[in-house]
Image 1 (cartoon, one colour):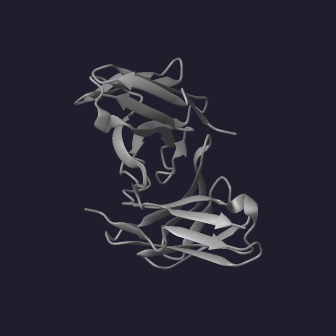
Image 2 (cartoon, helix red, strand yellow):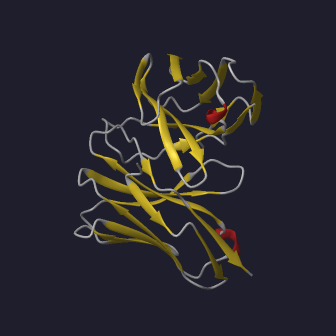
Length: 113
Length: 116
């Protein structure tokens, strides 16, 4: 049973548009929420991460929004570029958990020129 | 740059064979992980090692074992391969930082295993 639920499975966005990926969790012991980006033929790599004591974190065109009461968080990709085409995974881990991550199912993002 | 190297990119094995997947990291990381990646299921943790000779079961350890005799190397063993173990296997490592989650996982590029 997946502890982190991710949607949508895939999305297509035009260049310059906004990509939005949503994740939800139930376990209130989670206290670290990273997003990983995976290109074809490569392993995932950390993109951006947030802790529940902040509601938003921005790094360049990537923003995480976090809603602790709703137990939801989302990734926004602003001004999407063809180079952003990849699979994105949300994840969660617990304090004292050695960084073991529970991953969502992944979202394949395709940015059309 | 951290480098996590998985010994094979593609592997084809027969049902019942014993299979070894090898992973080596070059950054003296304490923690190492084996995940499997399946479409629609994301990444699921098979086993975890927080230090040499130390291991802990993940969410789906059945049918797998691991070995970590040296800090840089973490092996995943399929004792008797079955067709439902056909998957992409990803190894990762990270700095320990006192059990906290903040240091990122560094992944290898994966081994695609097909069991026929």
